[in-house]
Image (cartoon, rainbow, N blue to C red):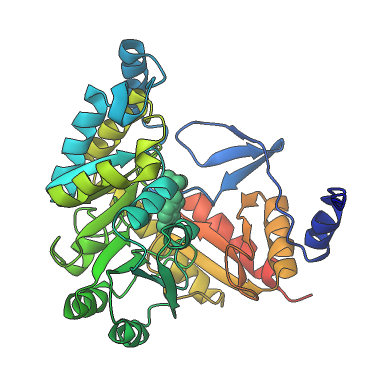
Length: 393
Ligand SMILES: *Cc1c(COP(=O)(O)O)cnc(C)c1O
């Protein structure tokens, strides 16, 4: 006789989250002056220090115009997946621009960065493969490894020697190494030259997700590869997203003709989903052009970052090694991160508390991000507010 199923109750698990200060909460945002970082959060005015709009392009007039114009011409929805009739002239044009921007044979546009990573990891591996990932990789790379069906091995953050030992112990099958370029919660850089050398030594395939580096670091904003002077041969697969520095939505994988052909044949998150709205592709093309034509935006966000680090250091606030616009202040417990975030909001600054499972246990933090849309006053005001809210109770 069948045993009756237990009644489904979500309440205990939710109460458990509350007990540990781990319940996540959405806040409703209304934008104020479009090109500034001032927002209204649940009705309260504050300065947004959590957005990934590093170059302030999300509301740039040329980007907005391109979006509206393309929507008038093509409509809103893409109407189908890329392999049916969803792949339109706007997507094709964007892919050409991205290939040129990254200096690679070809680029393929995905609907999100999350999907790009899932699709890539599965497409380039088989069941006999092993996927290696940095322990602090973005969740989408971790899930990409998990869902690929390959064996998954994590290596300690930035530890190339540990990766080398793991690679040396693998006796058969493809090896795929996945890493963030700029780590999304810490802002530090992957040791990419050493990773590339080790991958080349063991014949492993290296894919870098430079979601937070593209548009921001490197002499001309080409990201971590430009920063380190690495070639496409050294790092054969590059993932980028549009929802960060480019201020729009979507993502891409750039690489050789064969890699991109393989993605078209095998990446399930590419094949079985509706193409990005063509107007988003057009807006992204415009954002890419603006990022090149207005290098002051990159210089500005990096100058604000340096200014913040100087002022914060002078005020005795402990910072990590990050020199990118992602500046975490580690607080340890989820409770202290929540308390600090709420106290900052009362003073007119919104910095989200980042807690497990987004970051490892006991490394809850305030994750501050800067944007070219911030004013000097915004940054100075934030630093002035920090010492008081970081006082231990
Ligand atoms: C934001 C982010 C993604 C996900 O990109 P979406 O387009 O927002 O899905 C992937 N990788 C990294 C490192 C990210 O920071």
